[in-house]
Length: 557
Image (tube, helix red, strand yellow):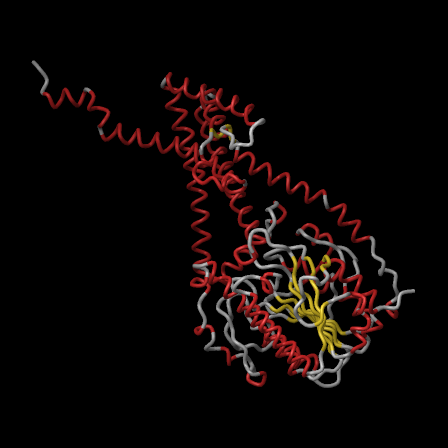
């Protein structure tokens, strides 16, 4: 009895079109795609292959070949599953390291090393300030879930492909052929500058991170030597800073105030207008200013590296170097001023918890943060307190009436990324407890809106610097202190989205004072008149400033 046509077709060629076989074929294609694309992806993130676009994914990943071969050799199912899981975790870790490295290069201009891991918490804090705690937590959960899904997909893909290869002789031939091609391509790639067909991007990403970390740790010996060699360590306090005795000295760091603020298209015009008006205003108030450039050890973030470098004269471009510095007994400017008789104050309005290093290393007499200053106004993104309020509170508490000389480091953080929402300047007498700022956040674009366009980000960055500098000028115009000396400088350039990929690490620095003796002491520095350093103004590394300042204003035996 003959079988009906519909049954014969189901058992013939039509079997390959059955739902079950279709799902199996689709799963195999997905597995192969995962084993090819995901292990190659780290190479797109950390090398010049990223400029090639999708062609950067043309390659044979050694990691996938190796895991398939191992799964073919090993007879124990449980061991194969463990190895597949390790493979999935390894490639996912490589992807994560490559993505973090890409982020570090884009924001702080330096590759990621494992000892910088704690800075990921700081980065997360910036995200919270930009989008809010709920969205930041949602993003974090999403990233964790994506990593788990990636590791699971890779483990499943390795087992799936190995199972197919084991059951089909053609699969074994293809796998062996790919291994031979990889070896030949690897040899040929040594003599070629083209993108190699033989790839090991995941291994390379992990290896590069480990190698960079080893180099950073090895550099600690050089940092230790720089800390130990201090020409001012043995100078008696009575001979330190004699040229500034009786003066209130303020070091004001303007967050992200870099060279791009004075030279960047679409940014410099507004900032230059503020400085030009500031020069006129300061001249009318009896002030003089001199300016130059400093080269910062950091870029786009990690401001404390710049603060430590300026204060101690030790170049600290990495977190391990900074940790080594603050664990030492190196003489900082704060300690020098304190030993010479000044009351020392740190004013960091972005801090909400006690700053232990401020006491243990810098040895400030007073640590001022966001708590206890009586601010009743709204936050502005990262800046919990607007700069103008910070300076008004400092003036009211430290410079009003008879007082001992004060040395202070003040962080002006309204120009910290994400540069939105932005505050506006208020008349000095209206600042009060900050509640006058209540309507201002709603009058500014939000960070989510600003960051939709690089041009908008750059524009808001420029406006934030204008606000911070305007706040400082407002402070100088309203504080009647003939003995006031202000050193205002940037800590680093803003992130590459503003500064550009190949930007320098230069930041402006200005000294502002009424007393001509201050400028007589630094007459040999060659700094430019006014608040705007020029193209021909001196450029010093930031670690040179401490020694030059102490030399100019101290009596050395």
